[in-house]
Length: 134
Image (cartoon, rainbow, N blue to C red):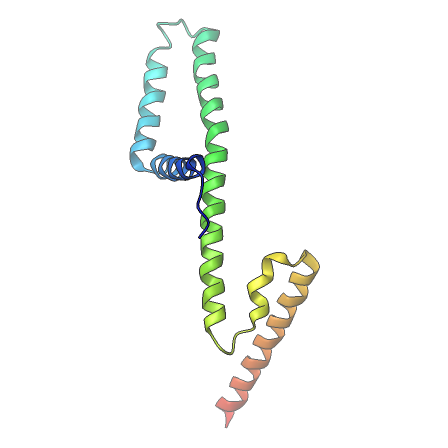
């Protein structure tokens, strides 16, 4: 395997850790507590524009950053799943190895392949029905 540079390794670990933490029950509870604290502070700030700006700015920044972290983690997970599926397809003798490269097909080619597999399923079902009648 190719050696990764230190920043890529650090970012991968960071993104995975933050994504896991953000999806936890504790992150949800912390968010609820933060909102409750913000609401309680409303009378102190006399529900001013500054009071509203604090939550708006905070949530905007967090949302903006989380989009990229979660997308990175999701892309990585998708790649891992695809590689595992490719290995399963490759290891199964009767499988059509064409399916390993599905991600390289355009939308029209994918639709044609989908029709091919639907037709194959219908043929298999009709064979099963004919055999069960015998």
